[in-house]
Image (cartoon, rainbow, N blue to C red):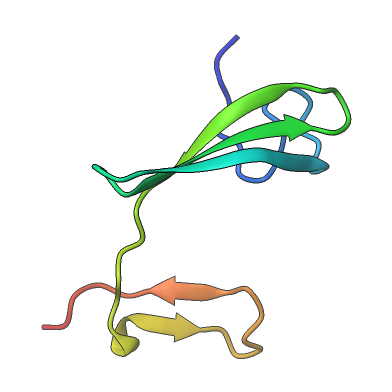
Length: 77
């Protein structure tokens, strides 16, 4: 089975009912590793979040309603 890229859903059953068992930060790469568990099928897996990258105020463009829709713009010319 090809692994699925899952953002906040179980890669086994695609449920959104998941929890985080533990969270660890890798200091050498600044990545965050989370051990997750699906509350519906009990599947457990790891996820890795890359380090956060600061952006300038001009690089962020919000939607008109400011609800969960943001676009990161390219570099300033």
